[in-house]
Image (cartoon, rainbow, N blue to C red):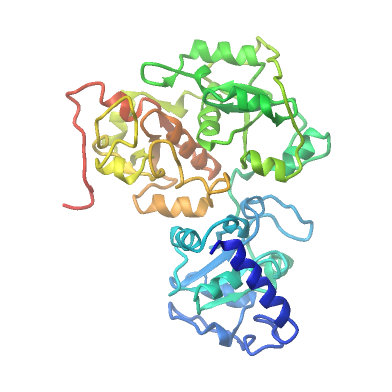
Length: 463
């Protein structure tokens, strides 16, 4: 049974019973009593609890407690969309927008829950802005047999009204823009977190110019990743060639560059190159093409020609620290605080397979590198991108990195086989405000060019 059929039945059931049963509200037995004491990692019978802001504050450090923000990515990350609601989220919450469940069957929904650590054994509270929107996820969890689940009816509205309560934000959230923001910008409307500078919108991908011509954001130009990387190693082109492509496209350090693609890795690849070059304001649209259309953006057809500008405004690279070469990568591994982060599938990292690459057969990892997660193979990044093409909740990325001692205070350089996945992870770390981060561009493919270099396999945590 498809998931949307399940939702229809749930909504019908809710509509029939809503008068007599106000879920977790004051008129039902689910309302219960307000909890005033810390549960200290004990499970709670949610039928006996009225969820309040005090209750949430007391239980955020409970290992058996999960707080789920069901709102949009942009609201969770820090954008203030509603004037009554603070931008950001309740500290400790994870983000699971309800629209991520659309079109999924029950097994896929369960897999999504497992990916985000949403276990039936946990005590779960869901919330939205005003308490009503989160009932959709509440109903799904209950239908799936989750017993310890409740809805915070006050939501972010109540939380925002209390000036003593903190909210958390993605530090550089404004660099991850959303479709409505782009729509308003291109229509000449006032948008937040924008200083009025000239901007260029770029659709980037690998050999997809035909798709670009079929439909793209109004005014957007197309850059192929072949313009910024080359054989034999698929490394980023030389500084001189970077300057040439930027001059030809009219990209300067002072212009805001807004990047989008149906493949987030391509956006990350270009974003890293532009930041390395010195572009001051690089942003990625947190959406795929479908999301842009759903937001009401009118796509235009054809091709927008590049408008050259031969004055980039500085010597390229202006941020050489954002890229490491082979020797620097080897030195990084030797340092106590250094992390050479393999953004690959577990099968690649452990040497089970080579990620599906056709141009090399070697399996394994660079010795001393740590597992940074990636996706199912060399062409996917499910660890960093959700099924709707948006970036995964950054707090979940932090959690999976923490398991391998990858954290903000490290010096971390991200790599994969040839750069795409590593660049996307780099941009995620940048969004989080991590300052000492880079991409080891050569990656595993460069490493294996020397047959004398060792390759590690297996699980390094097992002695």
